[in-house]
Length: 234
Length: 403
Image 1 (tube, chains in turn blue, purple):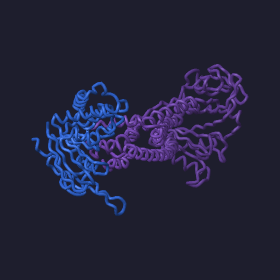
Image 2 (tube, chains in turn brown, purple):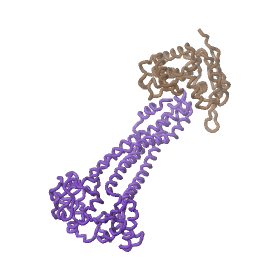
Image 3 (cartoon, one colour):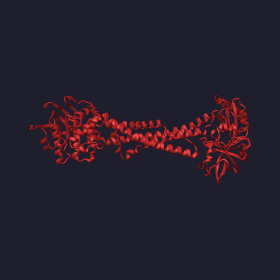
Image 4 (cartoon, one colour):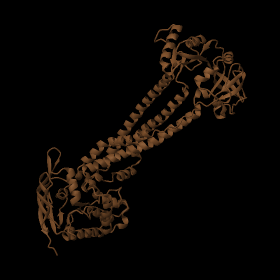
């Protein structure tokens, strides 16, 4: 089980055309296999291609070259809508900017990913409330995002990412907009999810954060994997 | 399926004044259509009541055309009593009565108004009452020998409507054209502006006041049977052409059947309505373009939101429907407001007409029209939202997330 590959990027490249002739090779031949239940960090300075890799891993974008397998299925050629449905089910996103929908309540924000999967409303409500209680926001369910602190908003985002019980949690600089103490709480939640068996992938530029929490760290530079470090499980 | 409904309503709620202003076009268009239709039905009922001649077997003959001015105004070649006699001799005709209408000063309670005064011929009084379907609600009708006496329409009893600030009842004296007349009867209410505001006196009296000699304004004709109306009309036209020596197509007189009169007035009303509805449609089209514009702006403003939704699993169809429903609601809000204002204006208008001319038009709200308008305004909004909604789905999630 632990050795099963959930996401496989096979010789993946992503090029962007800038102007008439210039081609930016954001990601240039990455090969990585993420195992189920792993805690992975994608590390690198800005311009290293980590955002692009995150988009590719999260199936937000399709590669120019190479193939991406999610749970053994080649998703590089899926239509945008099919891709959306798939990632809605299998991947939960946590963003640096929290990215909650401002005019939906906390509860509704958490219900939204389930809504896109066609889950009946009573079930959505039940699940959303359960997750929110678990994450300590049981008393904030009817609040709007702008009535919450940054840490609370990020917890709502975590709750939302869990809505469809995905196998993979993809966090893009999850602590980037938080003070260190709140950041620690958020990382605590990610650790907890990892302990529950979720595959957690975190994109960060903070080497300490990566080293402290991740079991596998991919170090990117100039669109290529520079090195991979693994931490022994305690 | 996604709670588009509540989500759209929430999105609408946070719209600023600018978003709502784009609804003006739809709003005005729908107000106009609804008000016009409400008023229009009222108008038609009023007109119907005005020409509500009791029997459909009645034909009227007038000199000139309908457009030559109101009865009583001078026309070039007036009708006379001999015309009526000739018409009465036609085989299809039961009888023909003449009628003169003069507008004279009427004084009562030291107040002066202009009133329409209708002549009643001594020989044919009963026939007159029959074609106009007149009954008295108090006192009695005029008959031979009733010189110096009048009967009045029901509005004369109402101090608010007669202009005298005091009710005119049986036994009162009116000063008409300077002469004193005793009111001996009040007519039953007809719902017709003309009859409810009319004074009737013996032909001899009116001739003394107005001096029209043998000329008559209107010849009212009763046909022997309903199915003979068209035939009788042709007979009268032929006879009158001969008597007045005019060719077919150049008639200087008008023979109208009640149906034809109603048709004519209705067709004028209808063409006015069509014209205004065309203008209202233009307003609605402009409004729809406004919705296209505001929705397109909305797509740009909510680019990031679209990105987030796509990231968490929204298919293109979800995004499309979301914007489409919102756009539809935008149109619907314009429609609801338009209906409320339109019905209000139409109702007030009818109420005003009733007050002004003393008609009894019922306020008829067309619920089918309202339903169609509600659905239509939603559809207009939705159709206007199609292109912006398609634009929203075209955002790539990565691009959209960048904001």
